[in-house]
Image (tube, rainbow, N blue to C red; front, side, top):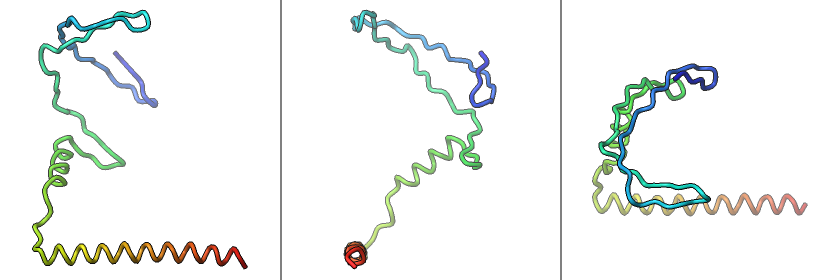
Length: 112
């Protein structure tokens, strides 16, 4: 079947999924419905050359990147962790003070 999306024509070949009807079903707004279970899994390997904003990638690359993100960061000693927590807390406090000063400056400039 030929389809077109945003001026690009491509062939669409839907996969046939073999399924088994179950006893679970009913009627919704006058139409009958039934649950169906697949006889076999339908997973397919991606054979597409994917491009996102001009950068080509494959599904394998995406899986590798996600796996790298899931890996834990380097193990820090107790002292390094305490220092990082203290620095983060100080950074948050400075950001909060800066935002308060900006808001106060806007109020003062509006008053004059």
